[in-house]
Length: 73
Image (cartoon, rainbow, N blue to C red; front, side):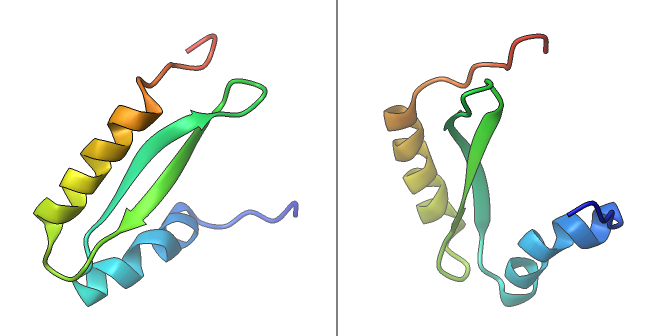
């Protein structure tokens, strides 16, 4: 804790493996913390099956409900 990392390193570790392997990935909002900050969930699909993954994400979005911006944003 307390260390800083370049943006590319910090965020690339979540996306690069899927970009290299051909697995589609999507992030959807699934709720909020007690303080109102958004929580997201990353879903990874089978290689080259983007449309199936998007259909799953769409169904999950129906269950989770609408995204609400945190107060002050």
